[in-house]
Length: 370
Image 1 (tube, one colour):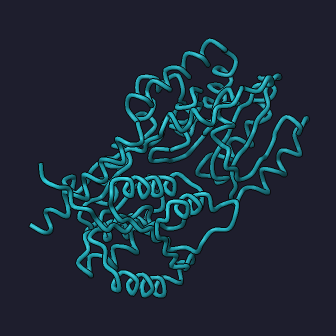
Image 2 (cartoon, rainbow, N blue to C red):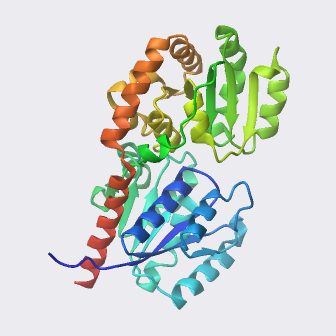
C-alpha cells in the first residue's frame, strides 16, 4: 500500500467570523492536521473580535497557522491581492482551497499564477448576477470546484457555465457525538428557535412579520433568536411593538447555539436562498424538526422527510402555517426529530465528508506531479 503524501494546504476564506462556511473551513483544517497534513488558514478580512472569534480560537488551540490579509472592503482588492501574492510567493503550499465568493475570486488571481492548484468552493446560490460573471472567470482558473450540494452544482453549471467535469459535490457534515455532549433539558415553556445571520437572506424580515401570528396560534410558546447582523436593530424594534415582548428573546451571537437547539422544540428558518445550511444539519442532529423553505440543498438534507418540514420558496403564509402545525403536535415533533437524527447519522457524518476533501487534494497533487 502506497504511503500517503503529507500535504501543505492553504484554506482561504473571506473572513473568519461565525458562520457555516467558516465552521467548515476550520473543521477541515483540524481534520487535515489529524491526518498528518500541514494546513494553514488565510482570511481575506481582519481578525474578528469577541464574541465573533470562536473559529479563530479553535484554530489557535490546535496551533494551526492563520494569516489575516486584513482587507475587508472591495476597494482594497489591489492591496489584498498584493498582500496575498507576497505571502503565497514567500512560502508556497502544494494546493489551495477557497471558500465563498470573495475568497474564490481573490484566490483565482493568485494561486494558479504561482503554479499552485486551486480548488474553489461554491456554497450558496448567489442571486447577484454580476457575481456570476466574476465567479465564472475565477472557475476557469481552478482545478476543481467543490459544491456543497447537487443543487449548487446544478446552479453553478447554469449560472456560471462551469463544465460538469470540473465539479464535485461534498456536502456539509456534523458530528452527532459532539452535539450530544452539549445536550440540555428542553424548556418547560416550548421554544421556537431561530439561529442565523440577521439578514434578509435568512428571511428575518419574514420572521418579524409572522411573529404575531405564530405567538397568537401558539400561546404557550416563546421565540428565541440567536445571531447578529444588519437587521439587529430592526428585530429589537419590532419585538418591542408586540403585544407581549417578553415572549421573544434576542440573544445575539452565542457560542451555545447547539445547547439552545437541545432546549427547543423546533428550528425556524424562512430562508430565501441557501446551499446546504449547517444550522439545519445541527438541528437535525439535536433531534428536533425544522420549519424551512424548499430552497437549494434542503431536499438533499431532509431527504424523505422533506415535505413535512418545508414550504414552497417565497410562500411565507405557507411557512407560518407549517411552523404552527409542527409545533402544535407533540407526536409530530418527536417523530420528525427522530427521523432527522437518523438521517444525519446515516448520510452526513462530518468525518466522512472531510475525508472526501483530503482524497480530492491527494488525487489532484498526484496528477500534477505525475
